[in-house]
Image (cartoon, rainbow over all chains, first blue to last red; front, side, top):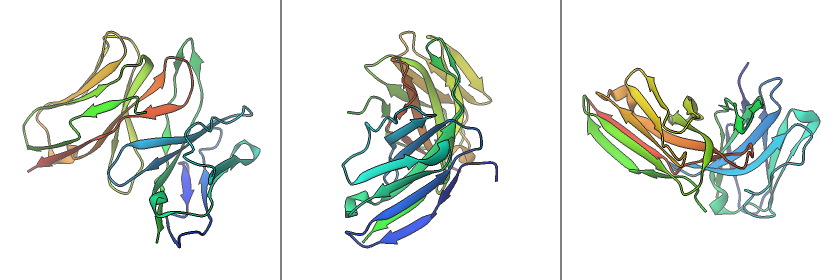
Length: 119
Length: 112
C-alpha cells in the first residue's frame, strides 16, 4: 500500500521478554517518527530519524528502548526486558522534510500502530 | 515535561451545539497542527497554522493560531456525531527541530 505500514498490529508478550516493532514508511519519506500512546491519551515522542543525520533519541524513556533505521527506510523499535508499563500503542509516522525559513512544511502520515500488551 | 496542554480533556455535547478546544504552551512554535484520531487508527492531519493570528476554516471547523504563536484553538460549529474522536494539537518547536510534539488530547463525544 501507499501508506505507513506497521507490524505486528497486535502483540501480547510476557514480562521480561524482548519485542521488536517494525515500521515501513511511505516510499521517499526521509523523516520517520516513533510515538507511544497510552489508552486514550496524547502521543509521547520517542525518537526521530531524518535522512543520514544522527537520530533524536531524546524521547526514549529508558535504555531498554532502542530503534534503528536501516538504509534510510524501514525502522525497528526494540524494547528489551518488557515491563507492564510498556503496554501501549506504538505509532510510527513518516514525512517529507521541507524547510522554508523556520517552518518545517511537513505533512506527517501515521500508521495504524502496533498494540503492545505486556502480561 | 508536557509542552502542549489541551483543555478540556473530555467533552460530551449534544448534536448541534458549538464547542471550543484549547491548546496552550509557554513555548513558541513555528507552526501548530491539529489532528483527529479515531479508535484503532493513527492521527490524521486536519490543518496546519503557521502565522501568528492566522485563522483557517475547514467546513464547520475553525482553527486559530495565537498572535504570539504559543497557543491555538479549534472551534466546531453545530457539532455532528461524526465529529466524535480524539483531537490532538501538535507543534514544531521554534528551535527548528523537526520532531513534532503532541498535546495531551481532547476526547470529544457528540451525542445524537
